[in-house]
Image (tube, rainbow, N blue to C red; front, side, top):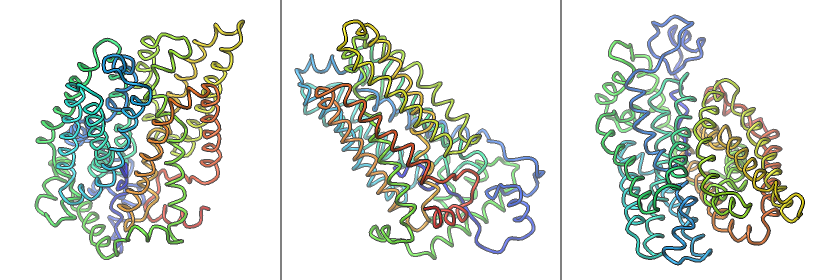
Length: 486
């Protein structure tokens, strides 16, 4: 989800505002540029913005299908290739190692060659990874393919939200950015549902399709206007912005805002990585890294990667369980999309984490009751309720909101460095969970789930105490907020 959305904050004009600028500020639409709209109206999405977003989030679908791939195929791959639990744990977790590598490069690549070309590169990694898995004859080729998928995932989870944030009007940015999570959930659901009905090789081949669709679609959408302005391609910048806002739209104000923002950012010294640890960035860093680490240490990656074995452990049909989990993915993500700009980031995070805590308690109890003869029969249904509840709660908040907050709390001059750090933390913590999960479940199923419940409880306290509400605030307001928040 990657400094997922890490450059979302848009275009704060630093020069003295004229009358039109003041009207735009009063209306709460600093990124709007026409000055001709009535104050009560806000920009609506054009066909170009919608199409560009749809093409971009095809990459998120690729990432979601790669995330969900390992659960439905676990038994079949282990049987066909004779893999042990340890070998399959390597296969599942090596995806996150590739993600760490891709995430560290994503920001620099996107700034160097642009958002569109960066998405092309990620699609090449996805295609190569899926083909390596589809035709694998041994564990080596499986792991190479999974590693390539991770690199593609690490790149795409940064560049897609950045691109979407840079092409959408301010008043629509939250919902359009959340479409990234919606498509990721759709890819995940596809892998879970289809994976129970076809072979693991066929599922890998089918998963290539969304990447190919994005490669074709990228020829028909514009490059990010903000990136074009940043590299000095002024004519292409205005053409792209006009195309995105509509042929009849007055883009002069927004174009001026973008140029002023870019000029201001050039005057600020780009911070080195070690500069992140200065006192003035302490609050942003604490909130960003803390939230990202807790998101993964809650154990959801383990549930996602190995749901099949969890259902079998609980005595529930893995095929039915995976299909039910797949069916709830898209509605849950859509629910989070609906509430994103209505309830705010912080309340939705609290609801999400609380729901996960209660669901983990139910799941943990299901494994605890398994040892009691008279209550053993309730274990399967309780395990299904727990996994479903945890997945729904995660999708409406914890899955996507941390990435949006990341884009809003870091100053311009440290965004690339901060984005690389929080993305690395995300993938590193995900690797810890996905590699250790099967071993922890062999140690104690109930104990493992209760440990995750404890981490979620810490998350609730962390959000309540330290995470600020960022909805509807400008970049300067957010920076002032972060300096006094802790």
